[in-house]
Structure formats: C-alpha cells, structure tokens
Image (tube, rainbow, N blue to C red; front, side):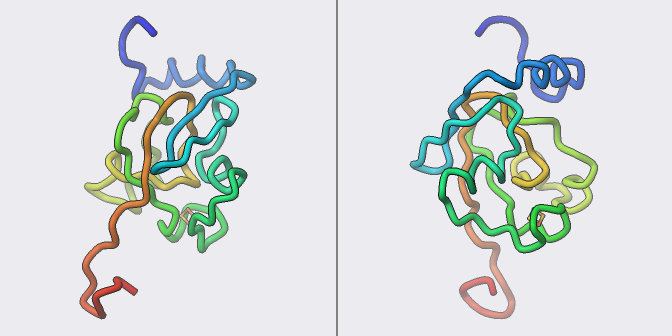
Length: 123
Ligand code: FES
C-alpha cells in the first residue's frame, strides 16, 4: 500500500467503508481472523469462535470488550467520542472492540488486567 497513513481521517474512513466487500485479515493475539473490511471488531472476534468479554452486549457502556492495539492503528476506525469518554487517556492504545471497525491487517490483543485494590485477579 502506498500513500499517506489513513489513520484518523474521516474522509479516508468514508472511502474505506464504501469498500466493504473486500476480505481482510487481522490478528487477535496469536489467532488470525478473516472478515470483511469495515466489520465491527467485536463481531469479527466472536464470529471466529473466540469468547471475548462483552458484558453490556456491545453497547459501549462497560469497556469489558477493550483490546490493546499492538500494530495497525491506521486500519481501525477513528477513536469515537464514546471511547474517549470511557477509556480516557488510554483511548487509542486501548479500544472498545464493540466501538471499533477494522479495515486491514491490524494486530490487537487482550490487555493485561489492571491492578485492583480488591485482589490480585483484578475482579
Ligand atoms: S461490550 Fe460493553 S463496552 Fe463493548
């Protein structure tokens, strides 16, 4: 692929969304997932048979679906206002899988649990 990095550009994102029938592959940890360009990340992960947490059912409220972007931020939809509100300063490095759409070979993983004052497992 040539040209400037598309990340964050709404004009670019509109163009990408018009190319929805294109098949793309991204990585979820060690697992390679093939889906359609413009698919919602959570839907693609669940369709691949992975039991990814999504406590609020994918409505953007809980952040249990958050993933960490390892590479390829430019292949994900721009960070939404919901993500900025819910994830704060971590928005961008972390994304809510239910609020994020994928267009290319991004590489994401489940983030390590945040330290908790309630116990070592973070729950
Ligand atoms: S599933 Fe609750 S915020 Fe994504």
